[in-house]
Amino acid sequence: MSKPDFDEIIDRVGTHSQKWDGMEKYYGVSPEDGIAMWVADMDFRPPTCVQRALEDMVAQGIYGYWGGDDEYRAAIQWWMRERHGWEIEPDWIFTTHGLVNGTALCVDAYTDPGDAVVLMTPVYHAFARVIRAAGREVRECPLKLVDGRYEMDLDAWDGLMTGAEKMLVLCSPHNPGGRVWTRAELEATAAFAKRHGLVLVSDEIHHDIVMPGETHIPMANAAPDLPLVMMTATTKTFNIAGTHTGNVIISDPDLRARFATRMSALGISPNSFGIAMATAAYSPEGAAWVDELNAYLDENRRIFDQGVAEIPGLHSMPLEATYLAWVDFSGTGMEPEEYKSRVLKDAKIAVNFGATFGAGGEKFLRFNLATPRARVREAVDRLQAAFSDLQ
Ligand SMILES: Cc1ncc(COP(=O)(O)O)c(C=O)c1O
Image 1 (cartoon, rainbow, N blue to C red):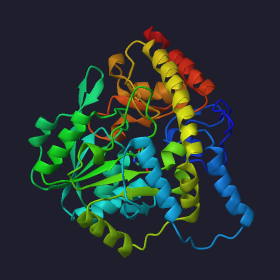
Image 2 (tube, rainbow, N blue to C red):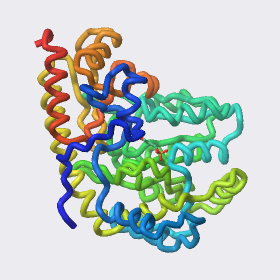
Image 3 (tube, rainbow, N blue to C red):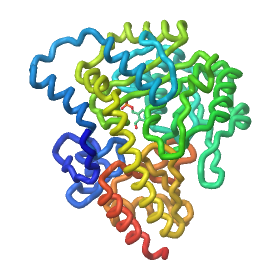
Image 4 (cartoon, rainbow, N blue to C red):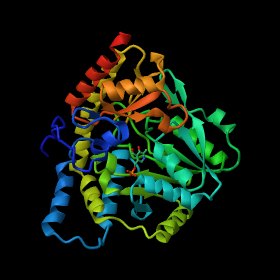
């Protein structure tokens, strides 16, 4: 494998990139001189093995119905064993149109209109969107800020349960807090789901992007006896989110049958491009690329955190996983409109607003660090200039 060049600046403007082509519309930041640090995709090409899979399809040039997914299932099985120490069976796997779709299907399969779904907030915003759109309630359980990072507050959350809750969506590792949950935290979450009769859905889409020294534990390994739904994907890991291909992995026969019924009722079947790219990605070449990627992101995180720490009142949560920095602006004493305006208009950086992640996110902004290092440095310089009066 040739060494990936994550420093290469690849112009994505005008390529239907949501992150770059949507920044003006959503944030008023021009892509001409702005930096896109919002949507969670990366400004890097995937590994060569993934590109090759697509090139082979293009070279043949016929794009008919896909058949025969043994190789794809075996590749997922291999990856989960090799990278996560998790044993799965090929027939536990469903291929959805990504994990927002996977979450929505779980809502459909395991809850009824009027039921509530538990979220530990702040958390990835699309969970609440699909839950509410399906006529279910969101039960927000606020994470606790302890020494500048998030911890669960399960004893307090017991008191928030009303009996209407039927499902819990866990984000592991956590977006936007960057936490890799410990075994004890995962076990406590499983016990919480059990005592409240909740179907536990563990979204582990960020499980491969874990910083050196941290180990992600699949919920299925932390709670081997609990029937649950596991969700993973190649899309974040390999930067192929446009393929909209996700793995929903269910070992429990009853939960699996209910999920299969919804898939069938909605006529969901996989996309050939996503399957081909995912099969190629889950390989030794893909694994070596992910190791290089994580080392690169670790250095981006170090540079960003150090630069942000030099601005009085700003605190970037220590990232244990993901490439999404979660920055607390509460120490500036400014109202959100003030610091948002400085970031968007003065620094010209498009970021996600914390309030969209639910209760507890209001004083935060989320910065995507999966971009060439020169851009991360530039973003730090611009932030320091935009808040220079605080020095
Ligand atoms: C926790 C989490 N789940 C799901 C997704 C998106 O999944 P997909 O693109 O497969 O629908 C994201 C994207 O940022 C995410 O952070």
